Amino acid sequence: MIDLPLARLAAELTRQVAGEVRFDPGSRATYSTDASNYRAVPLGVVLPRTPEDAAAAVAVCREHDMPVLSRGGGTSLAGQCCNAAVVLDWSSTAIG
Image (cartoon, rainbow, N blue to C red; front, side, top):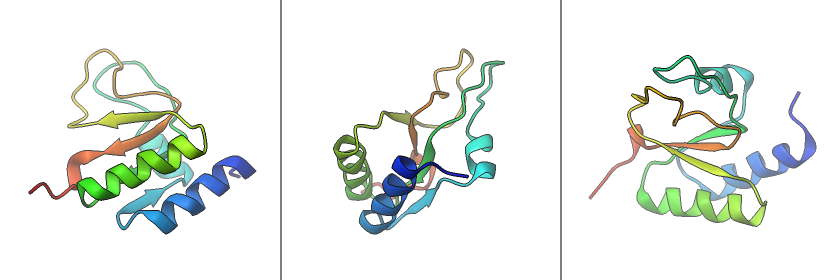
């Protein structure tokens, strides 16, 4: 079950971001690892569709005093893609 501050954050992100907002246990588990042995379950995951989506997600997280972790290709070998934060997954973002 998601706690109240995270539920509010997820709801606000869903309102502000056109991309996907995932706070379900399966998505959080999927993003808890990278190419290393390190594991940290994120607070949630946002897959912004546009750079504007990403900016909106960062603004919402800032308003809720929640950390953000930018994740690219997930090829980290030392745990840099894992943290107890809202993960921004750039793999589905339209650039240009």
